[in-house]
Image (cartoon, rainbow, N blue to C red; front, side):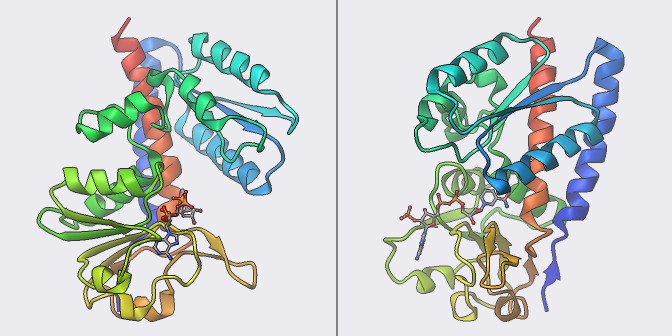
Length: 285
Ligand code: NAP
């Protein structure tokens, strides 16, 4: 039976450490780190994520503002809002909640956020920093996975690491962070042939596919460490990961449950990035 990696507990520890750092920051500077979150439209899951982010900001002692806009908001209006927030010294971090309504150009809006306020680390400038291993911010979900490994005492160096999925926000940066930690990394995707043959070689397997029950027992080797990033609804509407837990858990050495694994870490890392942005803004004055 695998040891469950308790992301909920680890994320709470991180938020508590951030709250202490935030208090020192406030004592020293007389203002709080600020995060502005832009939410466009009425996607129910996005509303839940944004509410959780606001709660985490309150717990950490940050200034937070959620700007809720209707689904008909135009590209120009959003550009103006981002420009205003870029210039607003109260906010050190700006987050544009995804997905956006179809008529909006996501890429150009994300690229409009100033790199030093880009706490999601999606801007090409920050992506470039990640490539060369010289970064202020890391994308929250992959950073959360690395922190789970670190705080659980799982060594990456020299390990065979397999990431399933290559999205710009999860799979690719995840592979890069494992590489920076001296893992030997393979990134798989929908065109990968003989996927199970590759995943069976993994000492550390990270699944970022977005399909319930995708990773089965015949895809893993005994003792594997499994990090399940997927957040999917199964046929009963229950939140589940990519991994068929009851099959894989008995084979693995460590595993993240869903919910309560990677999810809470993503928000904890957002808090960390916001505090880092505020500390850097002060240092640059
Ligand atoms: P995405 O953009 O849809 O990427 C999915 C990736 O999976 C793609 O690279 C795709 O390959 C690959 N894939 C799909 N079918 C496959 C197959 N049969 N074999 C191998 N690879 C396959 O999704 P994402 O944004 O990275 O998110 C992935 C999952 O993580 C989702 O469930 C999402 O909800 C979850 N997520 C969780 C958190 C969290 O905080 N826990 C944060 C972000 C995302 P191609 O590139 O070839 O299409």
